[in-house]
Image (tube, rainbow, N blue to C red; front, side, top):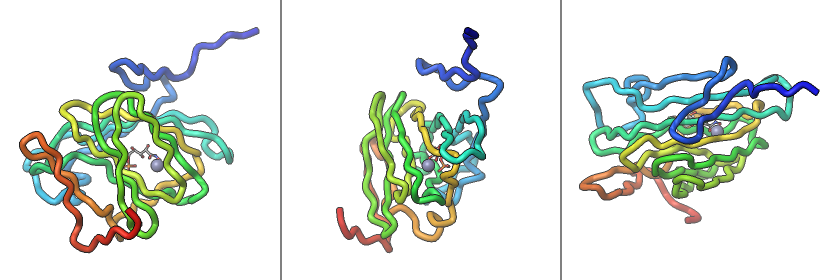
Length: 188
Ligand code: PAN
Ligand code: ZN
């Protein structure tokens, strides 16, 4: 029997994905500056996403991902990912907190917004109809693993049309949740 080395290694303790088939992209502040209410003059890295898949065009195949969300504040607002709905609403996703502290902001199709705490070992099942965004509320990198179907697709436009109901700020070490002006919580 052949015993093969894995194609990709996820160095859980303090590392990232490594291997020829691991992909990576980096988001800089200026690419996503419209996410935040305030402005910065510099252009720091705000997050990095590593991913691994095989046979992305085969229905039922999966992606593995690692998001590294930097602990930067934008005029007191906590750093966040763009956030998205999945195009294919049958495709759920699992997140696992690996390091750091944050919130997983969730929003249903009506705009109801709530959050789950994210920290090492926290597991999050994200329904296929639920928009999701990570927010770093801590002082170090927030690392989150994710597994989702390759057929999910990312709908960013829906978030631009109807943003998550809350912004999250950190002032004097304390978190503040600011409800967006047009937001109405219907269920929670
Ligand atoms: C994650 C996200 C990743 C970056 O892999 O794509 O955290 O967030 P944005 O895509 O919202 O910028 C995931 O949820 N994939 O489906
Ligand atoms: Zn997703």
